[in-house]
Structures are given as C-alpha cells and as structure tokens.
Image 1 (tube, one colour):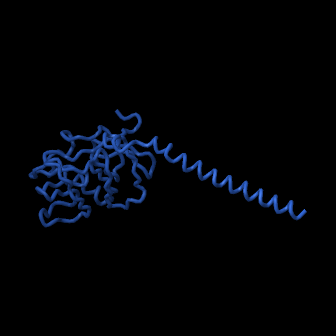
Image 2 (cartoon, rainbow, N blue to C red):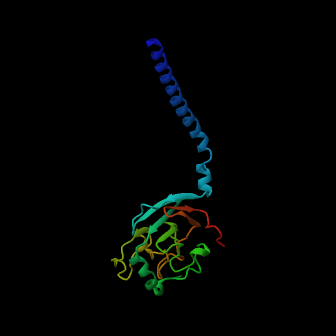
Image 3 (tube, one colour):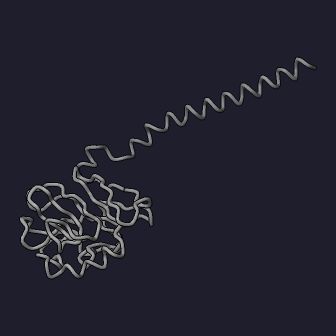
Length: 198
C-alpha cells in the first residue's frame, strides 16, 4: 500500500513536470513564429506604421519616437500652450498651413486631431536639422515675443507649439505632420490615417 501511494505521488510529479516543461517549450517555440508577424527593421524604415504609447506623457512634455528613419515628436500640449496659438498668427509665415505638409484632417488651428496632442516630423524645414523643444510659455533671450515651441539652434529658425514657422527665419515652411491616428486613449499609430479620413 505504501509503495502504491509513493508511485502515485511520483506519477503526479512527473506528469506535472512534463506539462510545465512542455508548456515552456511551446512558448519558446512560439516566440520566433510570432516575431515573424512583426515588420522587419527594413520594412519599418521603408514606412511600416509604428504604434507608440502616449499614456505616460505628462502635459507640457515631448517624447521622441522614430518612423521612416526620422524623429517624430509627440507633445502633450497644456491649455496655456494652446491659448497662445492664435496670438502668434500675425508673426507666422504660414499660420493656416496652406503651403505646408500635413494631412487634411490636421489642417486646422492646432494642426492635430486632438488639440492637446501634437504629432510632427521633428526636422527643420531649412536644412534638415533636428530642432529643440522649448515647451515653456516664456520669453526667450533671442526673441522676447516668442512663447515657446521648437527652436533650431543651427540657423535660429523658430516654430510655435503647432510647429508653424515664424517670419524672418531661414526655414521656409511649417514642420511636417505625418499621417497618424489614435488607436485608443493611450496609443497613436504613426503612418496610418484615421478610418474614413479623406
């Protein structure tokens, strides 16, 4: 009797061990298979969409991502930053973004789908430098009337918080807004227009 109970306990242990090891083996085998569904680095650099998490971006903060080997800036704009947008219009080269590149659904006062979220290609339209983000609404020493946005230190081009270029700087156009859409409240997919967008 005692021998039988020991054997049953051993059998249970062996069965459980086999199941655990088999399950781990299945997961390890599945990982390379699932990874084949993901776009390759080559496909991503060629323009495959990129989904990015925005849920932890604080108001006033900018986070940089990559798409098509270019920097993409995502800014969570504050109410104060948005309040300054129309006040800058008289000083801008193309305030209505008629000459600049953005999807039709972003050709508005905020150049965005949702006013608080700015998504743009972070490249100066002058010579392709990457501008600095200056998020605070405060005067700067080089321009006391400038209230923050994007500043290219190479040749001193300035943009507002909607990436619209100021007059009298070398950059000829507003920075580019790529196609994008909100997957949900915490994720943006860069490279794909919203469903039904013309």
